[in-house]
Amino acid sequence: MGKDPDSSRESFDRRLRQAQDRHKPDRATQPKAAGGDMSDLGIVLRAGTEMVSALVVGVAIGWGLDRWLGYRPAFLILFTFLGGAAGVLNVWRLVRPQDTPGDKPGP
Amino acid sequence: MAAGSTIDALGQFELHPVLGGLGQSLRFSQSPVMMIVASALVLAFLYVGMRPAAVVPGRLQSAAEICYDFIYNMAVDTIGAEGRAFFPFVFTLFFFILAGNYLGLLPFSFAFTSHVAVTLALALLVFVLSVVVSLKVQGAKFFAHFMPAGAPVALAPLLVPIEILSFLSRPVSLSIRLFANMVAGHVMLEMFAAFTIMLAGLGLVGDVLAVGPVVINIALMALELLVGALQAYVFAILTCIYLREAVAH
Image: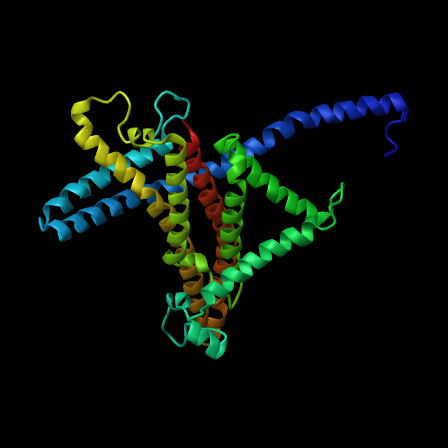
């Protein structure tokens, strides 16, 4: 505390400015970094369910169409493959490089 | 719950009528009770926190303002300027799920987010809202998104069903993710708690060994605190992403 002897007004202002400069870049990057971590972890947790859920929807639709139209198991087979493809598409949308504004994702 | 030497890991998710005869006749179980508690807690937190309305906020007011800022920034950064209109919805969703996840970790409590009926209802709410907003903002152009731009027309019979399935999988993935994470966490907690009881029945050696599962459960509790916040965050950010695609022209 008693380390710096010239605790005049001028030197205080200078040190205050230095301290503010020191903290400014920190403040600018901090929320972004924290958000980045959170969403990275979120992406990891999302990938598996994205894939499975599309398959579940595909199988459910195929099964329902079979029940309705009586073509068992034609639609089940077809929509299982389509659901798998949709799952891969979901994961691709999740992990692809984000700096391509040209191709917009689905609706 | 895990009495004797059997592990009843799923019994904790069963619904029982509460509040005696009235609850019996209304089919009023722990799940809606915890929902009401969660809503009341969030409202009380915001009301009590913001009541001083001080320029220099105290602790509770700071916490309330940080929560507000966090979701506000998420909504506006993700959705854009239109995000302000959806901010109350996202805020409610995030804190309802967060409170539900965390309340479920208390002893003798119940995690209503561990029921797929609840999470699917929330996810369908988000899904229907995003479809309605899409149709309102984009009109018939909304359906053009199901055909990827620049793809050959000959591939349309293959690509359009895939796009539609990918779109329809949204509420499913949204609900299953939250529900599965909560169920998995609570089953693990229950299993290790049951191990403790089983080991403690083995005498002196068991008493010493029984400390192991307790230590694991402490670590699991920390993990569950992370998962609870993360799942609420993922639910909210995905809501924002879907709404951004809905309001984009």
